[in-house]
Structures are given as structure tokens and as C-alpha cells.
Image 1 (cartoon, rainbow, N blue to C red):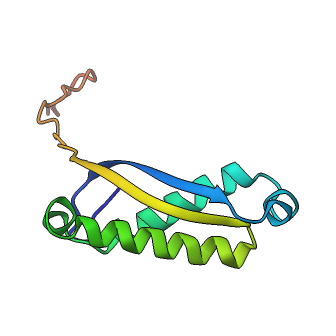
Image 2 (tube, rainbow, N blue to C red):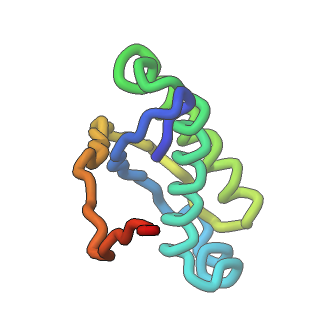
Amino acid sequence: MITGDENIVDIDFVVFWRISDAGQYLFNLAEPDDTIKVAAEAVMREIIGRTPIQTALTEGRQDIQAQARAQLQELLDEYGSGVRVRMCSFWLSIRRVTLSTRSTRSSVPVRTATG
């Protein structure tokens, strides 16, 4: 994912949830487990995408988790999912990007004009 200050990070997260309304859970969503997973990923991408990396790694961690839980719950309520989100937790690691400086040689011979 890309943070608000354009750093690339790897993020692992877990969402603890329970079924609060079995009828909604079974009949309002075609694939409830997949829907929850995709919704959680979308919410986390949105939050991390507007958060600077330093904040995500330090003092803002608990705020991010609380925001993720609240936004995910709001989204799942809009879907009528019958699910209550209990907790969201995540782990971040910075992805180092290295650029290759190796030059490539042309295999096509260069001809010079003679005259």
C-alpha cells in the first residue's frame, strides 16, 4: 500500500467480527466472508492512503485501528451484512524499493557513415 506521504508499505491486518443477525448475514450478501474481506481491505487502503508513514508506525496506530473498525462497521451496515466488527489490528513494514542502475548494451551493431 502507499501511505499519505507516498511511501510503500506492506501491511498485514486482522479483523475480529461476529454474526449479529444470521438472516442478514446469510441472505443479504452473496459471499459474506469474501465481502467482509474486500470491505476491510478497502477501508484499510483508504486510511493508510491518507496517513503519513511516521504516524502509522508510531502514535497514530491506535487511532488508525479505531478508524478502521468504525468505517468498516459503517460500510457493513450499509450492506445490511448482519455483522458486528469487534476489533481491527494491523502490522506495517516498510518496503524498500531498489532501482537497477545496470546499463544494457545494444546487440545491434552501430554503423558509421563513410563517404
